[in-house]
Length: 143
Image 1: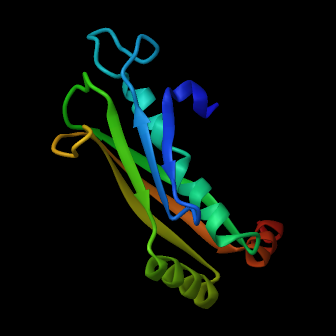
Image 2 (image 1 turned 45 degrees about the vertical axis):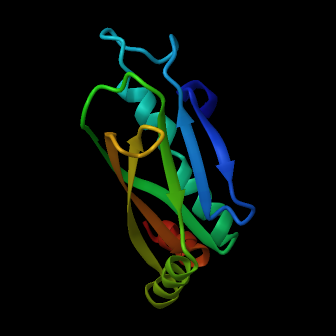
């Protein structure tokens, strides 16, 4: 499904804490006014935070997208880029909070920019749900 977004992952660190994606403008994602279709912008960014965390945190955690908000800043008529980063400190804080509270929400903002990051075309705010897997399974049984 990600392939149809027209986004492409161009760089991934071995520890998955850094991902860079490119959304090239093409006939596959141009809208009526020849700028990149907003749905392509969103879908190119949508799965990355969740997939990163699922793989970084491992099998003892549940990670789900909870909500998203997109703000278009200007029409995109050039290739777009975005970066997704987690620091060791952030990851330790996530683990600590989940250990204390069993679940949490995490807010992340992604900016789609030109190559040198001087122009922001779109900003996507996402909320992710993160929980201890055993807690989550028991919570679902109760619901």
